[in-house]
Length: 495
Ligand code: NAP
Ligand code: MG
Image (tube, rainbow, N blue to C red):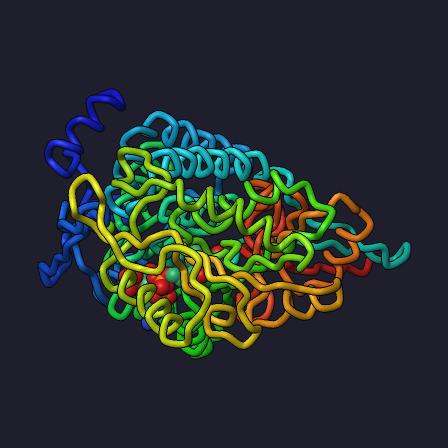
């Protein structure tokens, strides 16, 4: 079925056929032992569109067991070049199924189709990148003098668990699974209960690409059942967790039980600094993409605009005009902005603005829950800008994870640095200026895992990504990610 037929079907029936809805364990699709299932909702309509298996410790045990057996099986004897070949086939499979993946992702997560299509492309690029890395990630020789031979080996850490959030279901799965496989590990993934489908489709594609049974397993279900059993499992050697700070801390405590390795990608409250000399057209584009893409449900969203007082009024006026022009609608129609992911999340976002109103915050636009103007359905929130906030305001300090921009005004660059570093988070910072020396000085002084200069979200799979402070630790993407999935062994021989 081509994209237009698939879209017509999805719009007419609210779903698409033949979606995988069971766990993928040891190369097989299976229901939960208990028979439990749960619903997945389309946030654009607020209606259920598919039911899927809800697993727990029984399915997690089976999946970890399969992953452990696969670790010692044919997978471990493949040459790196053969692994590369398989990962390339996964990238091709993703491209071949791009339409189905994008439509399923839009229905499941609510994101605009254009964004979902971009996510599929980036997932495929990720498998291509790590296919290329398989046979280029090697150890060193260490010079100890003529009487010794010493070298290091990169060995796979073993069974890796991947706990995935609902905002970038496919691309977060790919960004963890591809480097883990490139390093020779095996995988058990647990997608978010709101968005299980594309991880299951990815498992199907991986299987079709010829990876041996058990190398990649997917268990669906809730975080408290499937997720908690997975991260606490004695058979898991490494956990990559992407999600909220509170759950991340909980995962950390559970992982401590077996001293399991951990990579945490948590939340953010990232500042985008606009200096007085900036190219304001570019900066406007950066702010609009930075806070309204995926309806602000991005860990690295530019959720704080830090702006020089001298240009504040004029810049905010232009920003307001662009924001008011954003259209809302179901993701399949590619509006300016789609819905939030769930009713519960919508309520949480709305709560922040209710409290802001009671503090008489300067809400320049938006601030309310709403629906798709065409259907009156769905879980939408108006694009919102709140001006001139104090550094200790809740809207500055807390991650809202919605289309809500907090504006802070600075008087000089010292002040800007203080404001930029003035939250518990340290994920991303954006800097817009024509003064490159200043930009690089600021980049050094801001505590963040990545700094984007004059283009917010610049980069791609090759650029390492991760957080400081409460935003987590460890790095994904780039060659750095391979280090997360391997353990270094030093060998020293007396000749
Ligand atoms: P969340 O509640 O922490 O959920 C994330 C994942 O953890 C889901 O798969 C969830 O399962 C699972 N989970 C929940 N409780 C668990 C437990 N006790 N043990 C193991 N797993 C458990 O996060 P969210 O609120 O859905 O997602 C938004 C957050 O993710 C934001 O804070 C955002 O910043 C962060 N995020 C960070 C990045 C990054 O790269 N730094 C990227 C995306 C999102 P269920 O959903 O099935 O319950
Ligand atoms: Mg859903």
